[in-house]
Amino acid sequence: MKLVKPLALAAALVIPAFGAVQAQETRPNIVLILIDDVGFSDLGAYGSEIATPNIDALAARGALFSNFHASPICAPSRAMLMTGVDSHLAGVGNLPESLPLEHRGEPAYLGHLADDVVTVASRLQAAGYRTTMAGKWHLGHDEPDMLPPAHGFDRSFALDASGADNWEKRSYLPIYDTAPWFEDGKPADLPEDFYSSKFIVDKTIQYLDQGEESGKPFFSYLAFQANHIPLQAPREFVDKYVGRYDKGWHELRQSRFEGVLGKGLVPQDTALGPMPEGLKEWDKLSDDEKKSFAMNMAVHAGMLEAMDHHVGRFVEHLKETGEYDNTIFLVLSDNGPEPNDPLATPGFAQWLWWVGYSRDLDKLGEKGTYAFIGPEFASANAAPGSFFKLYAGEGGIRVPFIVSGEGIPALGTVNGFSFITDIAPTILGIAGVSATDEFEGKRVKEMTGRSLLPVLRGEKASPYSDEDAVGMEAAGNVALFQGGYKLVRNMPPYGDGEYYLYDVAADPGETEDMKEAEPERFAAMMAAYRDYAASVGALEVPAGYEQMKQLTVNRLHDRRGQLIAAALVALAVLAGLVWLAVLGVRRLVSR
Image 1 (tube, one colour):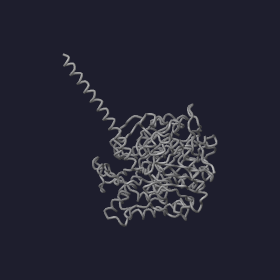
Image 2 (cartoon, helix red, strand yellow):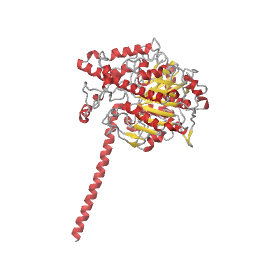
Image 3 (cartoon, one colour):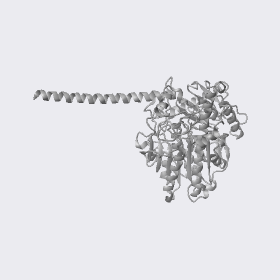
Image 4 (cartoon, helix red, strand yellow):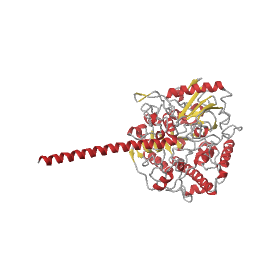
């Protein structure tokens, strides 16, 4: 057994004889589309009832990955996507907002990209690409060197928070005072006609048009807010799905499972993964509750279709400008579907009222409204996997991934295992750019991911052998893959904190624990995980830790610190005023 080590990209990873790309006189443009919180079976190409024709068209002419994995949390996934380096080595081992206080300041949990990692954008920029970014960044903004301009992007319009409103510049959670948007590293406002998916495409088109005369190839990163809470979408998209989900999440989960099977994305004898314990039963809900849940899911579907619509606008623009035929697209989700029910947090309903958010079903999705699907519909969107976002079950980390474009063979479904760190070296390989452990005269961490070009050329099913062990940890949730097996631990409230072993090649629903049947494999993979954790600096979370509860703990802790600091300043000012008064009295007495 060998643990996957960081590796330098050699010239062999550059695309030699890679279909039509070889014949191009110029290097290909590269478009990276990141969808937020979309489940494995949410896209039409992956068996969904939601209309995503533009992304489906990209999938039809390229490679659709059925065994691709990310982190279960957005910030660690984005760190790995941008750098090709394990999230802990990149400095973003957990969501910064829910980091245990004990982990603050540790190298693996900085909450922003470490100084010794380099983004794929920086490497492409240095190689002569023009680079743009629009959408959610979430990799730090406390200092200017944390924002996209310092990480290789010529132009950027970035949100650095876990999410925000999609219609206006406002916070979506009480842990944020505002929505921190930055253009080219400077605080920025949003236009009056802002809608996130439309705006992200509009900005990218604007940036590309402004640099068109340079003649350089481009790398564009479109990081959509869809489908992060609050779920919001124009009425014309939502109305298509009103009534579609009236039969509830059990019916949807079964239909999604059948859709996945029909697409051949998992073995035909796959068993549907279980829903976590403690979730609601549809048949036990009141009619009003059913109507509310179904409407929230309709907004989810409308938001995803709206995003796909704007992806289609972007594709059409590339066709009109003559760039489409020399552009390669990579499309993926950062993690599984969002399960959080914010109303379950004490005081949240009052906060919604206080800041003016509505849950009126007749307007849900429109400006000023706040929708979310909760863990039950999230479980359906993750079918056939178990769990969802925040957890290391397949429903939380097995996500859609599509590679398409001129020179990419129409491979159809790719079943071999791959991981989100593999995308950066793949992009560099497509561009013909090598990545070493030195950048601009500075030693940097080598990529832990492996190029997928041999897979795209049909030479391999996976960049990993059966001996390679690929680890992942986020907020105490653990996964380690090796030879078709998966070691996994899911933390409370929906997990139990115990380790399990699954043959995910045959059982992607994680329905049969194999640790007692294969104790030697279980022990070996446990040892491999310990080696992985030690090599990247992953720490155990404190007893009783829960991610969503920690958000509140951290906010209160930081607020308390701010209040104490303010109180000390006030006392200092008061002391100064008293001293001045004493001096005044002394002068009067002396006179």
